[in-house]
Image (cartoon, rainbow, N blue to C red; front, side, top):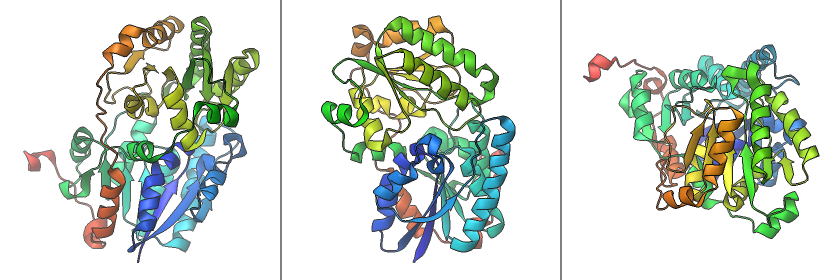
Length: 387
């Protein structure tokens, strides 16, 4: 039986993984080895490992990497701790194939640790572009560390090939997050109110804002501008907590202060998969700089104000309003997103990120790919060889 190691480091990637994890478990020729790390194991991020346990997935290994600080030196040290911790896990588990997702520094540490073990590594969501974050460099580096590439779109596949990857290593699957969105049940407005204490009887904005890691010195000004714009708009606001990135503590502290001063606002450390998708369905509009606003929100017909550079370079649906991080720009874009004219222009949108069947395509490839020297020994394809 082929052992498939899957690395999860945050509530975000886990929520996307769930359909894939269930598909792996239901495949008779595959055995799941779930490796839990990063924010999942931190009380300040809600100890979301408990949600994994509640879902019934057995945890093969827990790799502690995060420190109490989000300063650059702490993030760098966490990356080093990750390489050590994942190396110890791989020595014990010896997966036949390792699966990593996206662009987190913890994922990069896992792929780097797998390299000396000659573990074939599959990367989900490569070939994307997010110019405002260190994630961009981490994602492209993961492409070169990994041996199989499950990308969301033809455009992303082309970027992976431009990095010298052989055609046979690249599979276009659509975005895995859309599988999760399609299969996840939703809470009613009353259930959501009872669970999270959010007044769903009034229109509210869903705000998911993360620090821009290439601009972390400006985190205080940027979050202050966002909160000032929200104050001016005057709607109820549901905030989700930021990621464990440089500047994350600055953002989290500002959100807590805002919520303490505004009775019509709420901050939830972790909504969980059901809660987050339910919030997207119930919200009037979304504001922030999260990938969920770019990829999933279009399927909900949800207007999105995308702030700043964090998601620059990604494909967009008609529901996206881009603005800079100035207070006036955020306020103006939010008022536009709430307008009847903008909502009317969003009608009949199609999601360019796929149709929600990525997990089946990924599992089929994991099940059938030949494991051996030809998989782990990579050959760089020069662009001139393709011309």
